[in-house]
Length: 56
Image 1 (cartoon, rainbow, N blue to C red):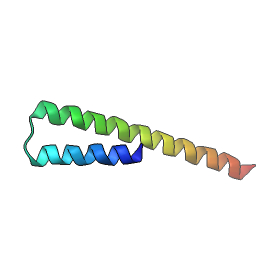
Image 2 (cartoon, rainbow, N blue to C red; image 1 turned 120 degrees about the horizontal axis):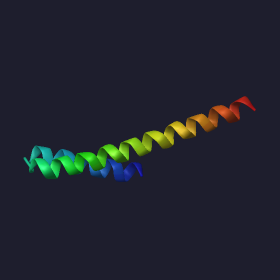
Image 3 (tube, rainbow, N blue to C red; image 1 turned 120 degrees about the vertical axis):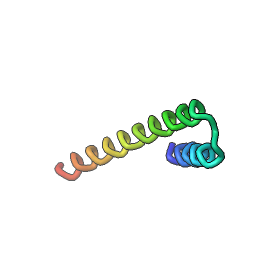
């Protein structure tokens, strides 16, 4: 997931630097944002699970 996120982020950066249309950039930015949120949620869940395991 993280590798795919980086790939999509690079694509977004390329689109912006090459002056792609606003609609295309907006769609790509939404995709990257959603992926980022999912990664953060997964990391937070892993952290919560690790904290619970440390308490036991």
